[in-house]
Length: 380
Ligand code: SF4
Image (cartoon, rainbow, N blue to C red; front, side):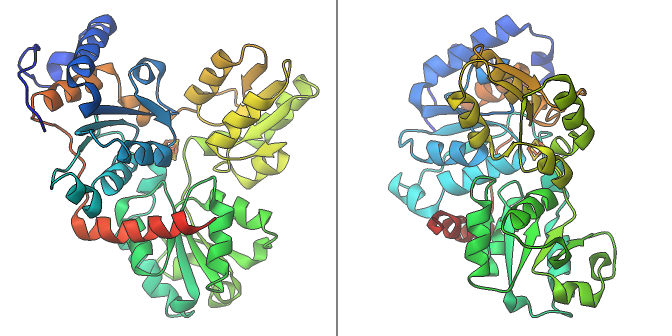
């Protein structure tokens, strides 16, 4: 990284940033961005709070952000305002060996402004648990006839597991196409970590519920399944979920429909099957954004996805009436940890050539993760 002497105070411990007012932090962040120019890219996930999004060079979902950053040839450092697995994906894609070689051996530093910004869903599937499950499954069914599929919301080690075992990554936009790819190769799929995306997608493909089983990694015997159940299953769902989207309930849909005749219910497929069944429309974040952008003025919506995204839609589409589907706050509390203070702290360290909270996926894990990501890219 280029280390010009910045016109900022010596980078201090995080505690020194905690009490600073937002206006001060905004000014210091703007200063780093101005001085570093295109060498710095700040990525802001759709679920991020507005104050942080205001400083993002690119806003999007996790995969879009990583791919866009990888295309910026002069980028030397990335601050990923998202959660841990997203920064890992950015590191894997931006620092692929061919890209590092094209930069003359220079890696791009990827930092996560607060290391506590994790993902409850990703944390529900540890690599040791997935490896144990794979071994256990092999005592009942032939694992060469199972394609492991991991949602992109997972640790790099799980993406690498899929790479090693003929598996693949999916996003909420391409989950169906990925499952079709998998079923063209094997009879069964092990889908992790989000049971809801897996179940909702498989059902949309007309796979009956009795051909799906749920694997509980905390039950020592076959994940809580009988041998017969597993033998019958085409889809083995990992018992994980997003703690944000799981808060939307079918009764929320009923209450909104009763209160607002004609309202359109639009939800993300990380919601439970019961919520999806009652919704009018279900799709990924980009699908949700497009539905609202394309709708005529005066459309009434109740949307079931992360709160900050829904609030931003409300601000950006005053010609429509947009409500949050749940009466309770459903926000990604871990992503919310990335605030102006953490962003400013990490940027000022980056500028001084002393990055903090660097996310670095080891080379072997990254190589296998790229394999499963590239399989996904090949799926049309
Ligand atoms: S919204 Fe859910 S899946 Fe997305 S980062 Fe937060 S906890 Fe993870």
